[in-house]
Image (cartoon, rainbow, N blue to C red; front, side, top):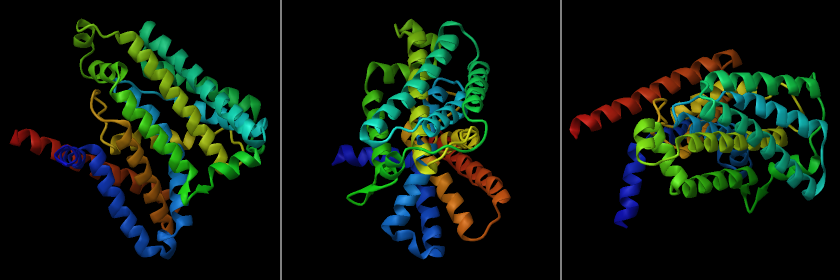
Length: 320
């Protein structure tokens, strides 16, 4: 019990805890204006809407923990989306093959990013900007305008529920579980060590380059999964599908408490941050706010939440 209590206490003081509190506040506000908010279908809709951004933010968090930036998220999502819409594969076997394609594309782009950044020592923002442009361009070659159709089995299954639980929620749970396991491995320890002090990590025997490269590969695979989930929701293709998620990905990471200085934060906070941003969007739509104000209000909420989180960290440091 004491261990659980201490963990809950640490969570409440973390960026993830702040994001979770924000989500609760937003949900209460949303439930007050949307009568169906407590229904199973409404809950499923919230989870489905949040899952692509949450998975993309989870991948981006790995790179931010290393003091890097990965812009290729937009290109990977767009490329996966147009491929799945242009070459649909029906039934469960087709869905598994499509998943393998999505993960493979993301991992391959991540490997290119990782090799150039870790071993070529290029700046991550420059490399990933290049791969974002390349994958986005390839998406336009495959599908030059919105269209196509994602396999019906895939779109229906991934937006359905199992025992009242959204399938997309189970996918998010799998991502969180994988992170919980990875964080306790040598890779997880190395990830934080490199982000906090790369030179000290190297002196302690950590293979910095391999850690950085592997982080890009895993991040890319998560971007591919994000494109897979987005395709299931939209049921169609769009060569610009990932563009709208690019800035929101970094907003979710910041809102979830991951420091852009590296070495502090985690995927769970980013996932909750993404869910909060999408819930805020739903709330603003429900109260009739016009769409071009939504980005402004999302930015304001993010700044306020991050400021409160930083103020809490400063207060705790002063007390210590």
